[in-house]
Image (spheres, rainbow, N blue to C red):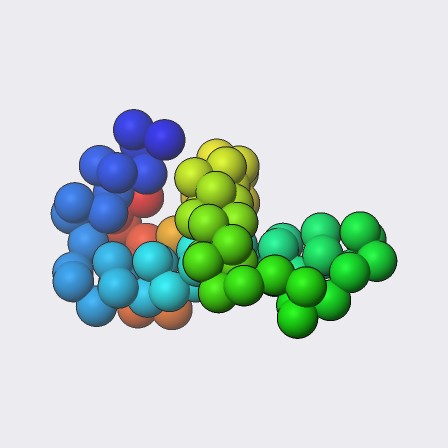
Length: 83
């Protein structure tokens, strides 16, 4: 995780912002999958509960997933030399 932070520190703000957005989007996808597997709907949870689950997933995202997201964004921006 420290390696990802070092790369992010070198990256432009636009890449950092995109990374955080993509990380959140992935966490939301994971939460939706978990809710579907539990056979519940989004309506069964209030806003705060859903935000808490998303925040937990953001923290628990695996290093490999984060690295893939970051390198994809760097490649799109033409900044692969930072990796």
